[in-house]
Amino acid sequence: MIRLTDVRLDAEAERLVLEVIRSGRLAQGPMVAEFERQFAEICGVAHAVAVSSGTTALVAAVQALDLRPGDEVVTTPFTFVATLNAILEAGAVARLVDIEPGTFTINPDRVAEAIGPSTRAIMPVHLYGLPADMPRLSELAGEAGISLIEDAAQAHGAVVAGRPVGSWGIGAFSFYATKNLTTGEGGVVTTDDDALADRLRLLRNQGMRARYQYEVAGHNYRMTELQAAIGLSQLPHLDDWTSARQRHAQILRDALSGIQGLSLPDNDHSRTHVFHQFTVRIGDAARVDRDAVATALHKAGVESGIYYPKLTFDYDCYRDHPQVQVDQAPVASAAARQVLSIPVHQWLTNADLDAIATAMIGVLGVGD
Picture 1: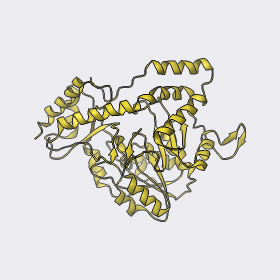
Picture 2: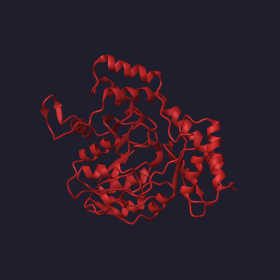
Picture 3: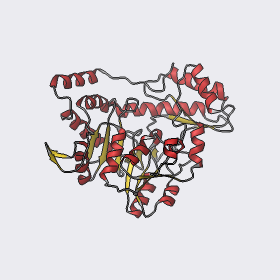
Picture 4: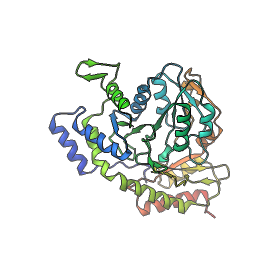
């Protein structure tokens, strides 16, 4: 089976993890500090505050802004549910608006319509590794005097308009096991704001400035030394791995172009796609529907995934939630019915890519 994701750790990961084990210090320490320093450099920011997960990174980012009950955060319903959960956990109201048809990212026009007197932040999601329209969203945030929180969980190293994601506002990254860069579990919040970084460091460490010196009501959001060691072993490879994903994406794009009813990932060169996923749309004009394609791929030995089968507000636990405000989202609803992700990761061989393309063409037909 050609897997949708393939997690591999090398000898350097083993060496650094063993170094941590032998040191006797497993909780947050020098490995975490070095991981923060190097990741801040990648994002071009002054601060990277490591935390225990990508969800925690989002929660901490929202909490650091000191939002009050009734304060609104505008975001997309077409995302992993952690985006929504983080807003709710921080006590804010999520205002969910539609996405752009070609990029799967939040539509700035819908954001502009949603901004009101209660809006305190915009939270775009850089979905599948493609950045949202950050120049426009940054402009909207600036005009309204509100914050910008980037859900960059899937977009390590992505760039938009020549600027890394995570540097436009407050960035929140995930290092879950299947991400382009992993620590197993873990996350980072990025910022250029010294005061905000200081507050984030307090929040992640039970609100302590020093031992038993409590300054805010905090939490245990800390990253472990073991997590940081795994991440440090991978950071030197991120550029090469990203280039491999982009090369594989171009091979798939060339092989699959022109197939009736098949829409390929957006190719906007002002937004550097790092291809956490290679996600296509199986439209109404296709010969078969999305589920039939997924079934055929599985029979051919190619794993695929549906990210995401429903919008966040389509689940019962959120549908009537008092902190969830929903705008019409027909573009996102259509995407949820049609998207399918196929393998693009850095470990694929040319034979794998040929097998993936052959399987797709076999079920959908030959391109023009």
